[in-house]
Image (cartoon, rainbow, N blue to C red):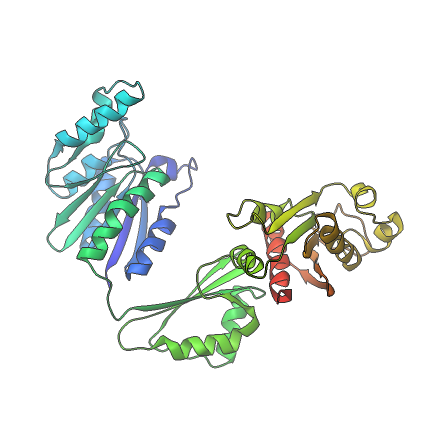
Length: 406
């Protein structure tokens, strides 16, 4: 199995100016090919530091990816550092320079000396065109190793990987035939709960790499194996042990699965939510599968709207509180009627001490799903940062809907 490392350059990645997502993106691209990203190093814009990181990576792996620092400004020194690391000179790629000059002219910009710096590459490197930006990528072939140098902007990084690097990897470094991977997505259980259930059931991972990745309201479980190990038996055990908590056997989010399921059964959905910051609507409304399925929803920021807009009597609110089974039931049914949907989903959560009601504690929430068959409600308790609790609350509502759908 080919091992890869990523060297991410840029002082802004270390001073809080920007979040680095390239490791996640690259790992997801490489995994289906059977290549493993084993290390991600982030380094500031320092010529010696970048050179050292590239040299060290080449001692460990045969695929090195370097991102960032290919622009026209004085702090864009990655191309210089990589060239030094492999003992090559920087040379102007005349063909790419001419292409870049035409790009600049097409938008009325001067192709000056700083702009031309982007067309310099390590001697002997294969230039990788940048279809959405300026600076090209590079592939530098060494004895027993390959370096891929990529721009830092996410769109450019992705475009060059998809257009040039992944096809080259498929052709020249084919996926190991013996590598297997299975992925499951789990809802309704925390990461430690999943691990405990597997251990208690006697799940034997001998010869199998077991990996977990926790997301708010979801857990990813991954099995990897090389050699002659067959994952089919292990997969059957996973299904038996975790059963109803499994919602996908691929890297999908709950909203991905639910919207597709609703489309399959020609069902529609509407939502109402209290104290979630609009997380349900945010997850659903912008999803590419939402049109024709998600009818709409509302976030209720002020409790007086419960009475004026959704018919909740002040007496019920005073008796039960905004985050309660009674309110969750009422709002799920109201969402279904208000938006003329087959299913109404409500989430009422307590993420602060400001919502009134008897014995209400932060972290308590109710989710409810209304359909033609009636209303189902679930009570949950969650802890942690309020922003994370809001997202978990939304995911809990989606999980209940998943279990209700035929």
